[in-house]
Length: 274
Ligand SMILES: C[S@@+](CC[C@H](N)C(=O)[O-])C[C@H]1O[C@@H](n2cnc3c(N)ncnc32)[C@H](O)[C@@H]1O
Image 1 (cartoon, protein in one colour):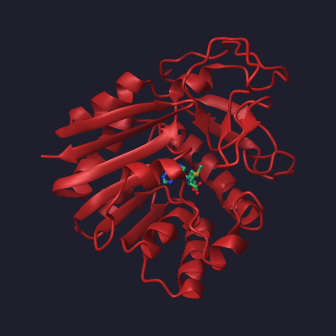
Image 2 (cartoon, protein in one colour):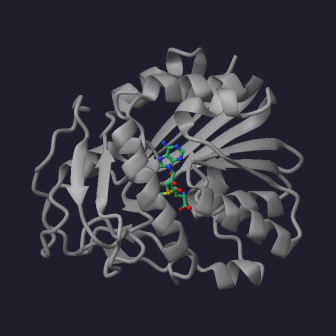
């Protein structure tokens, strides 16, 4: 397909990042194995009552969030295109003795790669949409796997945050990139990741697409989902700009003396399948 080169480069990079993040203190695998729930306050507050529900977790990385939902009683299936990440997720599930399934698949071929099971909840979060060339097929995947009456929930970096220069050291938002999706992906060559900015990587190339709020919402409405709520938040779970302030909750937000105009850094959305 048209963007196979980009997806393949991203997959190699995410394979490497899965290994790196697994031993990274930001991901806190040790705390998780000791029983800590690694979900953020936001999704715990907004997506309640998962006990006994079947849940499909899209782009689950190595499963810390999937298994945190499983500890709250959800019957979880996590999917990710990184085989390294999925192997780690399966290993973690075994170690904590939780019944969860993990499947290796690219988002674009998930419908063909999974059994025709339907879920009560489809969940996805934090750093997922930017890697997808096309949200029309993303919306179709969500709708395909939801039971009638089922719930879709996403908490994600707000696309407005991606338009600013993220290398300026002082507290300032300077527009640098387009807000609307461009046909050709952004291409970056860089070491490090949001969880470990100093790491040296073999796979430096990554490709991404910024998807506007209109594009995200319409891709869900077009597949027959009904939006229940759409919320915007002044904080994000990684240090998107070097000057963001770390809160006790583990989220990053504007420093108290921020002089500029604030924009949202995260959004959350719930939708129902009719
Ligand atoms: C930022 S991580 C998800 C973060 C997750 N909330 C966490 O903190 O663990 C993004 C995930 O998307 C996966 N991914 C990226 N592009 C994908 C694609 N086209 N199909 C399936 N998974 C993909 C990556 O392998 C990675 O695990």
